[in-house]
Length: 372
Image (tube, rainbow, N blue to C red; front, side):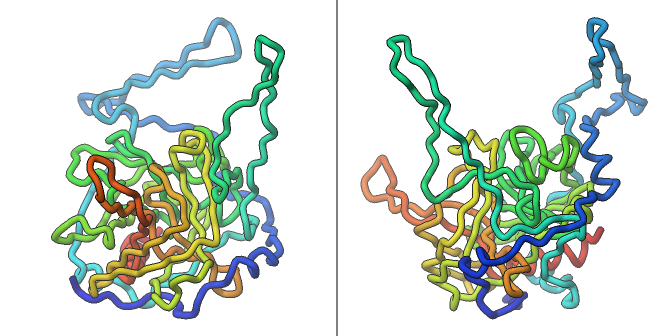
């Protein structure tokens, strides 16, 4: 693997105490017209079968002001939009096709509010009555360090839920006008046809920005390495819709092992053990205890105090630069390490993020080659 250059700032990011003192930055509140229009319409994709126009039927339901829209759905895409190219690329090609002048900072559009922490969900317990008169409560099991939230402000609305044709779901985040970063194992490499769908600010079925604010993925790129290494478990996705032009996006940065044990990192994702991945969860202040690299740019960033679950895959490990105004991703959720001590049950150990210079270079490759 070719050695990758460090991209970003080498100074440590801001601590969370400084972030909590940050005042919210209010935008104009006026969403771009294209975003408003996208939010009003849900799209289903259909082929004509023989190359012709598919037949779409519009039927009023029982005289009500309700209309049913019937669209032909064909296998195997079933209403999804097929992607175009899936490719794993050699590291020397990625490095050689990066424009060194491409910016690595985040972008906040002028209409969007910026919040230093998301608006967390606070639910009163549901009061239930048992047959014998005693009171019961609905079961809500939340980890003490993870907080569900409902917030479309910047940058919290830049993270979304990711779906693919294999029936899997995970997490991704906007890093450019048409760019999403996620875990490499979320990409259906080798499938044909294939599809992936990204929904920013996903909350209970749709985007908080509007029901139609989402995009299918046209192309995906990852690293062509000899084995499926955790340290290279990331991919960049090109969207059909330029969501980042309206919503903004995260920056990205290489990781320095001088930041080990600094409690400055945050994560957002859609873990399956919190409301069945229907709500995003947030945690901050965790540390990286070990940085294991291969010398070529891939890093395994190990943590013992960041709680992750299935559905977190591809979610960002990020922090804030430039006095707490510039959120940048340094890695994505990859996997857990296990110590197989006594069969048949492995003993869980660290959770691992995939990052390093190779991650930042792949993001830079995306901005260089897949602009808006």
